[in-house]
Image (cartoon, rainbow, N blue to C red; front, top):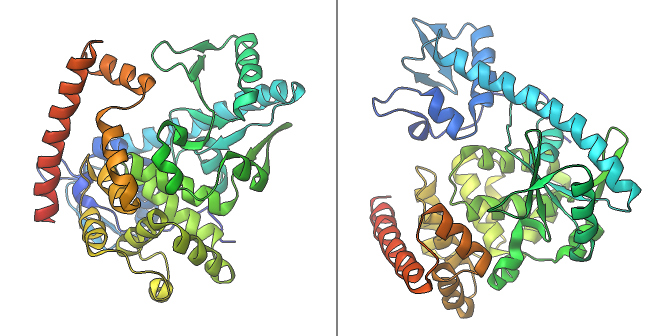
Length: 378
């Protein structure tokens, strides 16, 4: 297994997503894309290699102009140090929380967040920041989990009842990984159910506290679904997947990854996209796999240059079996009651169902028009 302790400056950054309107590298955009810590780490590697010349910093063989050493780098450094400190505090709190859960017979599955930092970034929270801790238990264990959190003085979020907060720490409590049960169409995208994921999970200790993390293949699949569900909107989620591949799927395990890609068109699409953008798999990896449809290949090529808010639903539509596509399209326009309530509150739509449907229809039409123009330009 490759070490994740020292990232090397080799990622093919989407520089356009990191520049401001004047075409200059922006610390703010790096922070929004979640890669500020990694860019800062690479800048230090480049600086030690004497690649800072005339106020310009060479990263990945790309000369980035107007990198204000006094301002932009300091903001990246501040973001890195904040992430490092937040992760350390989070891990200390999680140990105590897990000990209480363990005493009540709970051993939650940790998703993304601190688990990804520990496994893929060598425990360096500055490289990979996160806003909350995602954990999952079986649905029948949720009453015990909620009682445990209430006894620890956590408070349930008013709008998002699955989120519990205390002293700056937010726990997002899932009844299944990635909330896949919210849409029945997702069963066709992910090969496995919650019982299988738990059965394959690996022990993961935080101090004396015991928890679980997904096995390597489930982790890759869940990270891929997360990236697609959020329309490829942050580069750090792409980097998570690249590091997962590099750390967990060396030459002897590549066949395992190939079989998983053969079973899941969504995973095959995401791997194809990552190969186009980051060259993280051997060129012959796809030779023996079913070919992706032409529209999928076109979409992947477009995504290597930029992301569009509707690209996630479009990806899911193309990867679903034909018989489920209409069902998924309807679920976008009319999601379940919990999601409708969250959307109505976020966008101040009101609680009348007719008004909500008109809002969703208008929003879908606007997104479809923008997505079509983006796709044609790509």
